[in-house]
Amino acid sequence: MKFFLVAVFICLSHAGISQILNLQSSKIEKDSSLIKGNMTASFSMYNRSAAANEPVEFLGASFKSSIAIFPKNARLSLINDFSYLEINEDAFLNTGFQHLRFSIFENRRMHPEAFVQFQYDNFRGLFPRWIGGLGIRNDFIKRKNFSFFFSPGIMWEYEAWLIPGTEKQMKVSFIKSTNYIGFRWDVNDYIDINTINYYQTTYDPEEELWRNRYSIELNINSKITEKLGINNSFTLSYEDEPIVPITQTIYNFTAGVNYKF
Image (tube, rainbow, N blue to C red; front, side):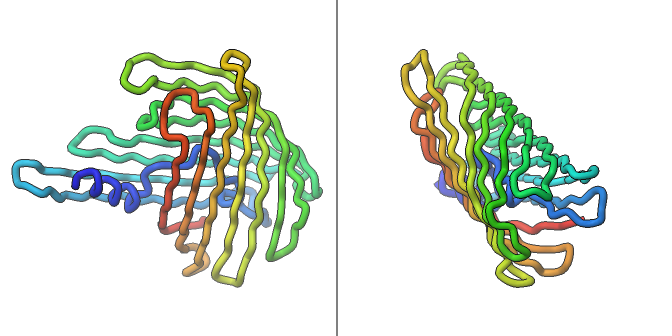
């Protein structure tokens, strides 16, 4: 029963994040403003137990933000995503990332982009993950209501994983191929849909195997007012050869309110 309540609360409080960032859902469209951004936040408290002598108390919070600065012919984006879940005053889930991305010549169909990212996920034993890389984005179709894009790239990744059941860490560092493909569709003035698919791979010479990571995210956004909206998101990611023995497939569904400024 307790595990069922935990699962329900995780869904309600948006706890848990995807392993890979959805760039398109976080991307802010350029206009005459120098700085633009949006934020999504939630806070929840929950108390329910099957017996009086077994109290179960939940505390959850999540915060997402995306801020973009538009110098001439360029874009600097800072994206944040944090989730926290506490059960009976013990931290149960604590995940998050900070992503910084710089791109130039976005008015061209093909343009370079560089990125760095810091990430952690205490429930899965990841702390930290550092990423830095370069890519070439190709806006193959770029219309007012629809865009289709893809990007091949290369990145350096450092990870430190806690081996399950021990206090030991497994630290690894790889050069990886990182690639994404996706689209964004403004169905009408009130609804837009975007999705992105990632594939990242590298060869591990010590283990003599390829390590592959796949991820997909789908977002459906509904506008209530010019600044207020509702976001529904589903993510699914899979690693065929995780560094330590953890669940290979993870998924997450969230629904929240979004405020733009």
